Image 1 (cartoon, rainbow, N blue to C red):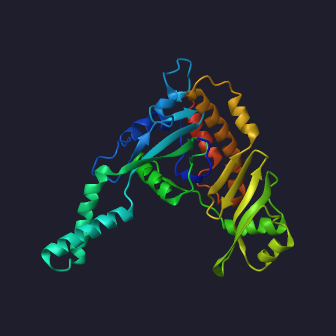
Image 2: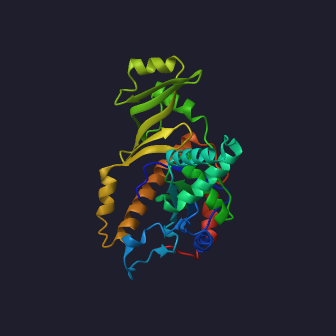
Image 3: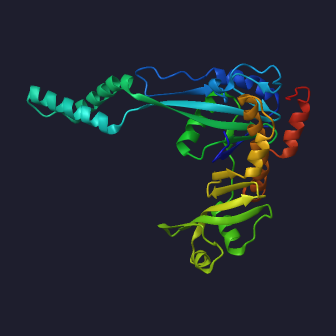
Length: 331
C-alpha cells in the first residue's frame, strides 16, 4: 500500500468531513463487478483493504470505516479495481488468418477489408470467454484538509481510468494541480545548488535538450554537480527528472509534469509503522496509511510551496470549512 509513485490533484471547492458521509454511497453506485464473458474490461470501486486480508471485524476498531472508504483523521483511502481480459494480438491475428484462408478457399475469391474487420470482431467475441483475466488495483487518498486527491500511480492510462470513474461517481470537480515550468526550476536548482533546505539532490536525473528532443541523457549514481554534467546544462539541456531526498525520510524522483516516481520511504518510517503494535491486518493497514499520508503531506506541501502556482483554495478557506463542520469527528 506504500505509494511508489503519485500524481497530485486538487478539488475545486473546499471539502469538509460531511463529504465522507456521502462518499461511500456515491462510490457504491459504480462498485466493481467482474467481467461478463463477452466483456473485455470491467472497472469499479472496491474496499481499500482486501477482504481476505481483513478477517473478522475488530470491535476495538474505532476508525471511520465505510464499505468502500477507509478514513483516519482527515485522510480517506479509496481503491479502483480494473479487470482486463488478456487477449494477445498475435492470437487474434492467427485465428483471423486461419479463418480468412478457410473462407477464401471455400468461396474462391479474396476477402475485402471491411469483411475482415467484421470477422475479427466475431473472433474476439469467441475468444474472450476463454481468455485469462488480470486485475489491477489503483489506490488514492483524499486529504480533506488540503483538498487534495493523491493518486498512487504516475501512469497516464491508469490516471485517466481512475479520474474518469471518480468524476462519474462524485459531484465535486477536480483538476490537476497547476505547476510552474518545473523543468526550468529543476535546472536552476541543479546549476546553482539553490533549492529548499528540506530537499537534497541525489545522484540521478534525466536531461533533455529542448532543441533536440531525441538528445536525452540519463544519469544514475553520478555526481550531478560534476563538471561533465554542468557542461550539459550550460549547453542548453534541461532537467526533466531529478532525484531528491526529503528530510532524510523520503527519496523520490520528481518529473517535469509534477508527478513523483521511485518513491522510497526510509527505514525509520517503515519501522515506526511496524512498532505501532498492530494486532490485525486492518490495524497494520491503518498504521501504514496514517504514517505514509502524514509524511507525504509534508513533502507535497514543501513541493507545492516552491513549484506550484497558487491554489484556488487557500488553507484558510479549508480551515473555515472544517470549523463549520466541527460537529463531525473522525477518530
